[in-house]
Amino acid sequence: MAKKIQSALISVYYKDGLDKIVKLLHEHNVQIFSTGGTQSFIEDLGIPVTAVEDLTSYPSIFGGRVKTLHPKVFGGILYRRDNEGDIQTAAQFEIPSIDLVIVDLYPFQETVASGASEEDIIEKIDIGGISLIRGAAKNFNDVLIVSSRNQYDDVFEILQNKGCGTDLEDRRRYAMEGFGMSSQYDTAIHAYFSGDVYTKTQNFAALPQKALRYGENPHQAATFYGDLDQMFDQIHGKELSYNNLMDVEACVRLIDEFEETSFVIIKHNNACGVASAPTVKEAYVNALACDPVSAFGGVIITNANVDVATAEELHKLFFEILIAPSFDEEALEILKKKKDRRLLIRKPVEVSKKQFRTLLNGVLEQDKDNAIETGKDFKVATEKAPTEEEVKALEFALKICKHLKSNNVVLAKDGQLLACGVGQTSRVDALRQAIEKANTFGFDLKGAAMASEAFFPFPDCVEIAHEAGITSVVQPGGSIRDKESIDFCNANGVAMVLTGVRHFLH
Image 1 (spheres, rainbow, N blue to C red):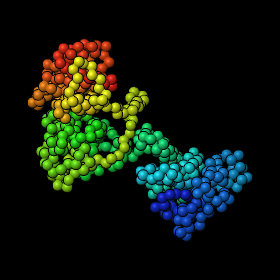
Image 2 (cartoon, rainbow, N blue to C red; image 1 turned 30 degrees about the vertical axis):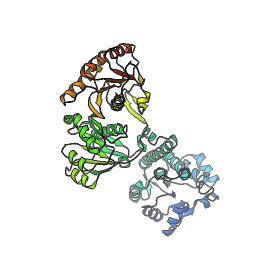
Image 3 (spheres, helix red, strand yellow; image 1 turned 120 degrees about the vertical axis):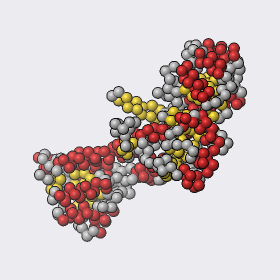
Image 4 (cartoon, helix red, strand yellow; image 1 turned 90 degrees about the vertical axis):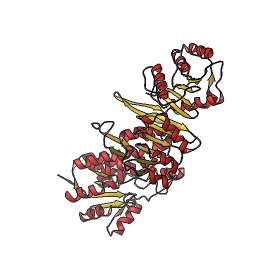
């Protein structure tokens, strides 16, 4: 049997859609308590309302920071209607029975997103509202908690169908949603104070949810937790899939290594084309030349505006997604000729410094690998030091190497990826794969640079590299047999530098 609502406390920030509930409560002679702007809103509807300060005999104090924090309010919400001691205490202190609480929270996340001052942000940390939600949710046996304007339509239907009453099942469901709202809110506050905007990814309930068509394969269900609209404006094409999002992440992380005008082409989470050049068109043409076969159906990103000349070249290739900070209007006209091609404008949004991965019966968390070594960090291990051009090539190769699946080897020269071997169980296999690909696409490896994300356990890699024409090498070092690789390089005029930093990616 539905439990009839006798009295209600209503105090909300957002009032759209509230009027129909208030009118229904009034029709059923429910006593309404309220505060501030909500009280004025109800009075403007011509409906009687009791001010909370008349109930508590205290005004709103400290600039509105304290309005509802009083035993007559929380006692009315929390006392157990089937507990004789609670009933006697309520009668002794003239505490009313509050059966319905409609409350929402100050817009903390919206205030942070607006770029407001810290003073304004702190004032949007709700204290009374969050306490009312938790108190009413705890006592769901007797009280219905409505914690969001998104619930108004459903609540109105419940009350209308049940004679302004609620069932235990209704109250329990809304209690669950109330605790979810409380969790999201507190997590957002914690994220603000932590300094990492997306620390809240530790609590998926705090993020918007978007169901995807499927996961990596059609038989796998998938959901994205987050707000893509904050990071991208999708201006053309179909919705992004699970695999698209994985590749977009790989694109974003790799392109952010480059300040020069650059293009990155990703296929199955690995780079198959990377190049930096004076012009955006040249950067794209050089990136595509790395592996035009793998680039088919790939995901592409640049850190420069896409002009008409570049768009004309891009349009010749079938690709899934193109990401850029901006596009010329004429370039868009060309690129939009393929209706399913996704075009994204990337916004300058901070991303998390953490990574999470479900594993076994738990979750792994780690800091992202945001380290990258440049020439000033290189320790020359050989008698021959790399030339200035070789240092640039080593830096370029290392940026790519860090973002490829281990074991990997990257070959590069003149701001262009020549080839890479990725995800091999042997580093020798990775190197041989890279050399074979470079030869397939007509690259001359004479004078090329080689980067490895981890040390060489044996000298075989430098031996094979030298035979292919490679003249400079960067690797972390740290093998007990480093000297064998260094000795071979010294004997054969190869420059080797060590970074002391490993970049495994599993």
